[in-house]
Image (cartoon, rainbow, N blue to C red; front, top):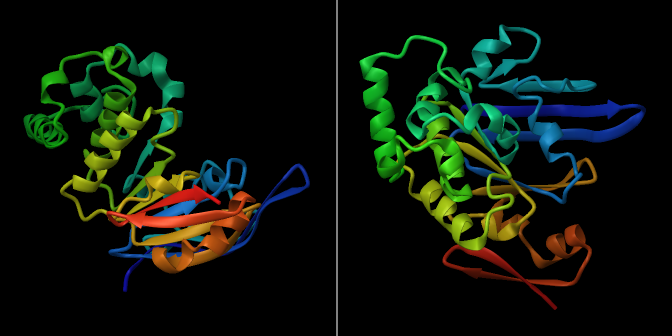
Length: 258
């Protein structure tokens, strides 16, 4: 089966400190993964190697079976879509743009429209906005949207360039439970076969369409595989450092402190 992403013996050191240790992880086509770990465990550092914001100190990173350092990486990056709460750092650029233009800008992975947009692009954006049930807000400025609407807008934007891999880096961070559930429902119902990686430290965000889980703890992947085999009370109690019970409801895991 085609490999979407591969880390082989990847380590990363900064200022003499080992942040990632001997990471071996593969994602294949038709798999959706959750990357689960506490804050500071190295999740964002690990995935920042895909757009080459961070470079492995040792080991190999391959995306779409192309090894970093052996090809034009910009062409690989163009095929990866990102949704992240950290995009709010670009709020000055986003705030005064309309929802419609933000989705359109996803064609070029930019914040703002600086290149030619065709009528076909506009029709495609309209269809995406409609699929995400945002049509009534398309002319509204980003700053006027609720946090939940803003995240849905960024998700719609990520679909604009038809990525071959979607990375969702803690997309529900800071959302209240209603906004979180609306976002997760939108993700679950999105008409797409694009494989995705969902980064979180909240187990209840692992929606039914997620098939596999990798647990990252203190810079090491301590467990990975089918979600039902990885999300055990033993693994999660060890990760969170407290005695936990796990319950499955509607194919989603929920934690109870014993």
